[in-house]
Length: 333
Image 1 (cartoon, one colour):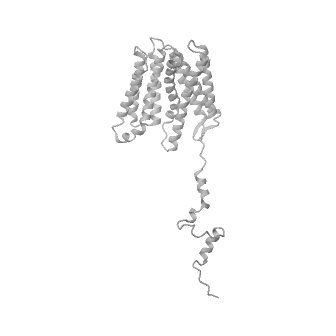
Image 2 (image 1 turned 90 degrees about the vertical axis):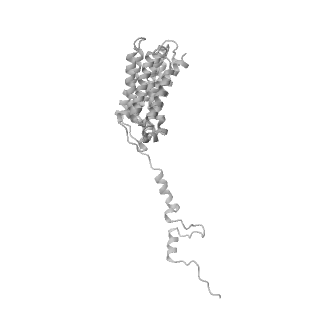
């Protein structure tokens, strides 16, 4: 018998304990890297997966706040409608004064919520642009949209120039120019209802759009106070049922007004005009909600609460106004 050769890898106590921990089987030679440690073994992977898929906390819906926003949206709608109905050919200045008050509210809400570079100069420039737009809408011989477009472009350029003086504002300029454009354009857009009251089908169009958009916002917000289900997103305190119900009743109100108004309105055309206004109002209102949720998730400091909650209805009617102008000229004529 030949003498047995000594083993190169003796079965010491440390190796035995390691094999016992791994289930009684020794891993095949050459398949385990030297860098693998017990903390990186596959047995630890489920714990990492559980951490990655943590449940997102659902933001509660504040019932009284939803009702307050619904009431504010209803007041805006009533103001636009009554102003259009009482605006006589030689008496459009009162309507312009009311709309300038709405423009000031829009600037306060959107500047506080979006916090553009150089917020003070930006708000001042947008306010001057809104005042110039109102003046042109009331006094120009021809009621045209192009002068308001030039006022918007000029106000936007001047606001950008005002944001170039401080280094911290210049650093944000490339990322926030869209915010500046939204602030200036939205403020100027509230002068469009004055133009519509000076045109053949404009008064009826702005009435239908304001009623349909107002009904949609009021119903959606009021429904959120009662039944905010199913949720649009966990971080957004809005319900799908309210948005859908508001869209349906807003379109129905447009069709109903179309059956009472004179030519060229019909129930079908009133429904189309109302649906367009409803879509515009809901898009802006929901976009504002998602923007607020995104800023909160990013850890940005919350803005003044009144400004945050007025932002949606004010932005919605700012978009409804140019939509009404487009419908009046390209759909009803």
